[in-house]
Length: 203
Image (cartoon, rainbow, N blue to C red; front, side):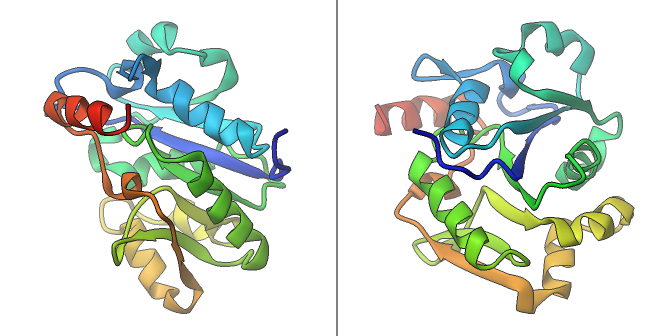
């Protein structure tokens, strides 16, 4: 049975060129399951219904081939070369206005455990106005919870000059770190070699 975090949304960032990987990550699979499908199922298990998938590089060519595309709101970041923060801005503009906040996911972390999402969302219930970062081995990672109270500031920022980290540090008292037993929060799949290594690790 799914948990009831339906008042939260998710923004999945998948707009980059994937130059080191050599192919669009939004079309890749992890141990036989598409990246986006693994992320979607973990979010659905927690009751999240609205998922915004942000594409950028070659977006129109990718959309017909996205696995489970009908489950997502597709947002296209035409300024994807400005980086992840610009994609977050585009994604937030598609989020339901009544959402309490979002889970910001990176498409190249499909192996993050379902229990990690649960711990973050349970913490969001206790601290509804806090940025929440998963912490493993004394290091912060992703996915990140962003409460709705900060959406406007993020959307209105200049992505050429500001990063999410800078906005978070501006509100340092509103940052909380959530301990998780999940090394995947630190592991991005940037190359095919990393993908093969992690597939073996999590098989």
